[in-house]
Length: 183
Ligand code: 5GP
Image 1 (cartoon, helix red, strand yellow):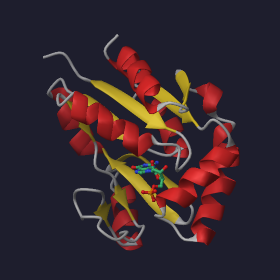
Image 2 (cartoon, protein in one colour):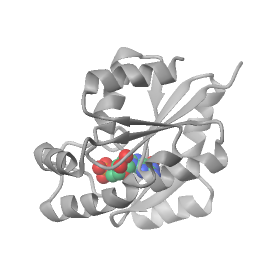
Image 3 (cartoon, helix red, strand yellow):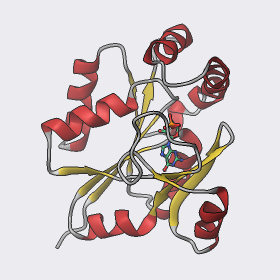
Image 4 (cartoon, protein in one colour):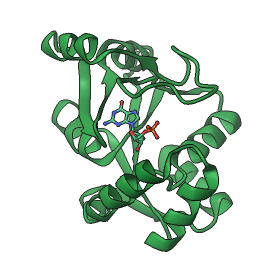
C-alpha cells in the first residue's frame, strides 16, 4: 500500500491551529490527528489520551532517550512531543496524518520526514493574537504573556515553511488547507 501523507500545521499559540484541525477532521473523517504527549498539567476538561498523553518530566525524558518521539520541543517550560510509533503506523496504513505542533518541533519533523507538507498559520497581527489568547480564557495572564513573547520569535520562522496562511477568516483558510491537502 502506498504510504500516507504527513501534514504539519504549526504557528503560534492562539492562532487557531486547533480550531482549523477540528474543522478539517469534521469535514474529512478520513484524516487523522496525532495525539501528542506533554508534561503540561491538564487544563480543566482535558482528558488523558484524548487531548494529550499527560506525562511526568521523568516519563517524558525516558521516552526521549528511547527515541520514541518523532519530534519534541520545550515550549514555555513544558515538554511536548509526537509519538513516533503511532504516526508511523497510521502512515503505513496509507492515512493522511495531521500534526498540530509548535514551531521548533515543526522544524525538526523535516529531519525524519523531509517529504512532510508543512504549513504555517499566521495571525493577522500580534494584537489580534493577544486578543484571541485572552478571549479563549485557557491560560493565566502570565502564561499568555509568555506565549505572546514566544510568538514574536516563532513568526520569524514562517517563511521556512512550504505554505504560510494568514488566519483572518477561518472559512477561507479551511478552503486553502483543503486545496493543499487534497491537491
Ligand atoms: P497547549 O499548551 O496550548 O496545548 O500547546 C502549546 C503549544 O504546543 C501549541 O502551539 C501546540 O500546537 C504545541 N504542541 C502540541 N503538541 C505538540 C507536540 O507534540 N510537539 C510540539 N513540538 N508541539 C506541540
